[in-house]
Image 1: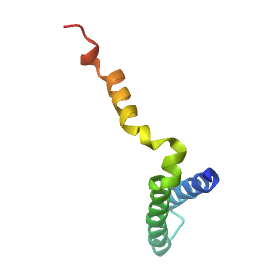
Image 2 (image 1 turned 120 degrees about the horizontal axis):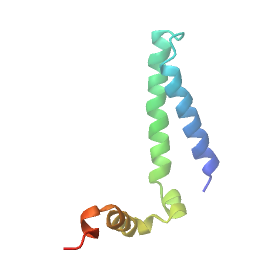
Image 3 (image 1 turned 30 degrees about the vertical axis):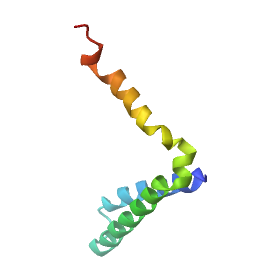
Length: 81
């Protein structure tokens, strides 16, 4: 799993988000950058949903991880009846 590619894409995405709020850029450039943002998000999500990344983070245990978090954060379940 090449995390460098993913982190680099996320860094570029952050720059693009910041650039869309840059008042020195003209509207056509901002419109183009907004399109780039959509494509970057699509690419990042594709990597995150890919089998290689899921294997890297141990996604097969996600159901148990969610149940553990719910159990820890559920205040009502910790109260004695």
